[in-house]
Amino acid sequence: MSGHSKWATIKHKKGAADAKRGQMFTKIIKEMTIAARMGGGDVEANPRLRTAVLKARAANMPKDNIERAIKKGTGELEGVNYVEMSYEGYAPGGVAILINCLTDNKNRTAADVRSMLSKSGGNLGETGSVSYLFQRKGLVTYDAEKYTEDQILERALEAGAEDVATSGDSIEVTTTPDDFESVLTGLEAAGLEHDSAEIAMIPDTYITLDNDGTRKVLRLVEHLEEHDDVQEVYTNLDIPDDYDPDAE
Figure 1: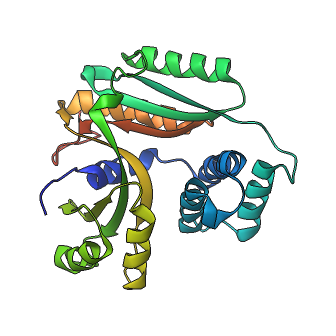
Figure 2: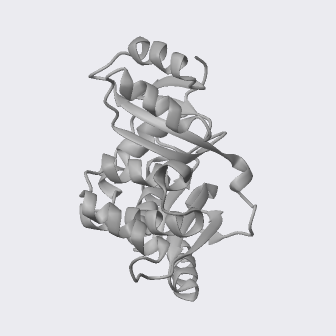
């Protein structure tokens, strides 16, 4: 199938920037709480909550944590009232950046995001300034050392996937957001064990920078992802295969 988003490569190469396990749990719990608040606590009837629970299970989150997060969202347990905020702008080198947040203090989050972008050489943009460069897609990734693309391709097509591509040491299966769960379920039923599964913002085109510029963008992404209010950070940065994070 055509297409090569390089998303898995980017996610893998910035793996060192991913949140620690405890912080990751906090972010997933926030997402489950707000999903339950907006759409109810019935996982089968709430697609957003279902996706968040899938992510929680993939992270090996204890069942009790999942249930408490849902009950906080439905009001059965007392919890913090989170608000969704999204920011658009540019990272160093003109790289487009989308930042999705869940916060209990909008002013604090906005100030922090603006400060981190400014200090890195980037800047905030108006709503819609870069989001048109991305498409919302379901994405399931597999270890290319464990499976071949042909093994994944046949089953992914049967399940209704849009695209399958190998990127570095990962195989990516792309779906529409509506088909994400059914495709994932079909692949799991075939006995395929995924590395990650999420609804993500995938860029239509990518920007390549030199080694120094790439390092600056990834450093910004790392700082943003370390912030408790930041849920997801997306960019259209293409990381070259010869990128060296330690090169001067």
